Amino acid sequence: MAAAPNLTPIPGCWGSLGRPAGLRSPLSGADSGDRSRISQHEPVDANELAAAEVVATCTGGRVIERDVLRAPDSTVDFDIELPSGELLALEVTTHVDRQEAEMASVAHKYQFDAPALSRSWSVTIQTSTRLNGLQERLVPLLQQMERRGSEVLLAVTLTPEEGQREPPDVTVLLARAGVVAAGSRPAPLTGPVVSLARTPSTSDVARFAARAVLPDAAKGVCPPAPNPGGPDQRRQAAVLAAIEQELEANKEKLGRSTRYRRELWIWCDTLLTRLALRAQPPKEVPSLPAEITAVWVALRTDTDTRYWRFQAGEGWARGQL
Image (cartoon, rainbow, N blue to C red; front, side, top):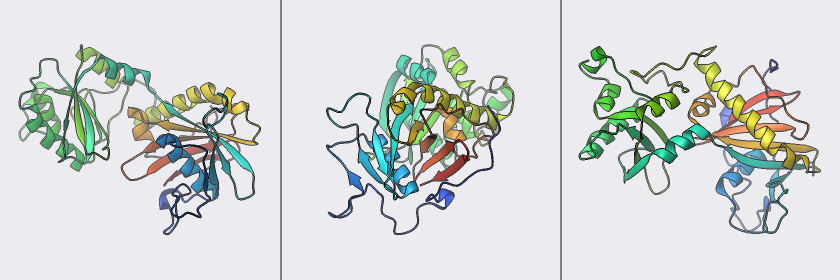
């Protein structure tokens, strides 16, 4: 991969400044005369619609749904009609980390409501951990994690000295409670939940967790597997790998579009990309196939959507809406 040129803002985007006051979402339909969205059927996939909304807001365009009932399989998800009248073809996909999915598939899960938390948590516990009383011990510790801004805790391992530290760090307390790993996500409308999982082997968790890099606030964790570069480089490499995989998977479909601008949106919410997308894009750039003129990679947080966008000749741009 080549070095990227300087960051180039996308016309019509406000980046970290957010959406200007008074701007109505292109998909809001706030009044009966709102023609910003043309639809042939309901409902639409919420994730796809959210992506189209961001692109329309950034370009000043309006969303036209294309992948409707009885549409050919090769139809892209949306056209974005730009102010010039030009149509931009948009395909929306979600990148799935196979290793994360495998971890979820082998886990035996328990779940409980946790209204005292602000986020939902997935917690992996040791096979021998007793569930009796765990909920009462776990929720206050996860509250401490939220207060210090930690969203991910992986492969908790303690030295004998760390295990006896007084007063104990929250990571020590989680380890004493039998927690092996934990990760959070925005809570659903019904409220925060905590999902508990027992895995058949803690070595599987350690092997999986060794790929991730933790926030600086997380302590008492095993170091990542050796890899050239620092934490930022590893996180950025995870995003670039996801982009490369999804470009290959979606280029044929976008290549069938007759639009001059054909863009791919990737929802990318794995452990590493969740951290990477909060920072600056990398110096390296993806190699776009001829079928795709630009790529977006994005993450949803509790309050906004954060994205990177790359277009050949313009380089990376970063923003949030």
